[in-house]
Length: 512
Image (cartoon, helix red, strand yellow):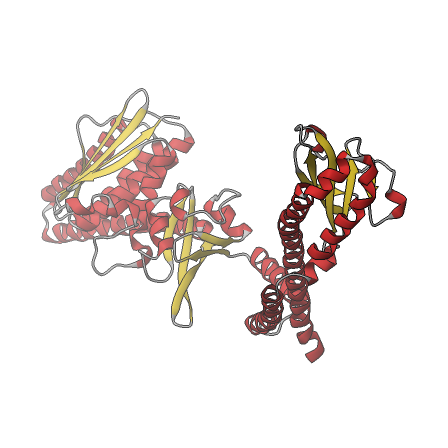
């Protein structure tokens, strides 16, 4: 295991040493080019000076002017070469024929000029046949060019240029190599410590294992950094939150999420099992901050889909409401039967008849009123049942004279039952005397208005009661305030709205 753990550091050290070696080679190449350039500049000026001195010598000019004295030229050329340290000094006549040269085979041959500007009578320094050469014209007494002096020096090879670099540069290069090796070893050691001695293959395996776990669990998982950007999200979370494919790396504020969802994701809404509504789904979310060495580095949010659970709960609440209505009616009938029995025992038969007529008329009147104004059977049945529950609590339930609702399709009927039932239940908890319901139908929407005799909702809570599933009942917490949030979701799903002004709730549902 130790060999495997050491291999990562050895690989890093090897690669870093290769990088250092490459950099050192680059520096060496640069030094070589610099040495070559310096050589050409320095030696070029020196060769030009040597050639100019020879060309200005009176004996050289006289020997070139008189062909009988050409034999004197080697003396001047060799003397200049010896004194200057040049590799060679060559003298040619005006026709470029070499008259004197250290190389006997060159005598009588044309002087190689390369790109020289000497044919135009101008001095020139450059490279000819791998030699650094200075060409200077020899001017006669009449101002014409009577010869050419060439002073040259062999150019060093590239490696020779590096070796001939200044000692300080070589010392710096050596020091850089040592520092690079030591730094590479330290970096390799630090990387090994930060990766807990894991090999790249093991690290890749851990990442693959994490991805498989994240995408395999049934709960949604969202990772966030301290700036509110999504760092990871699994398939379940992407589906439940309807997130785009490029959600990772983006801030939650850029993803068109509702305020309640943003509050939970960013931590503004604290506590366990937070209820969030998202596009027809009821989600239970928990946010857990993540700390490393006492510093918060982000958070992980888990979420579960509880839509089916809430749907079953709603059905249970509906059955409970029906049971409560039946129980209230049974309780009411029991009280009335006891009253009738007491009157019979007292022999008040006329009073029994009047009492029965009064009770029958009251119930029939409410049923007739609801049946006359509300043609949808499900909504009408809900109002009749809620009236019994309200009567048991000592609260009167009434319809406004302008209320009218014709028979609607099954989907709208179900949504109206949800909205009206939640609003009436909310009013029953707040009212102390009466509840008034108004149902109005137009060509494009149905408007439901429920008002009660209670204290109403404070203006600063007018949005809170819908957005957070808030409840005004101090003793109730958790999912108890979900009714108004579901009411709002139902209205929005039908391109409508719901609002509260004091004790008046107004809901609008479009006729889709």
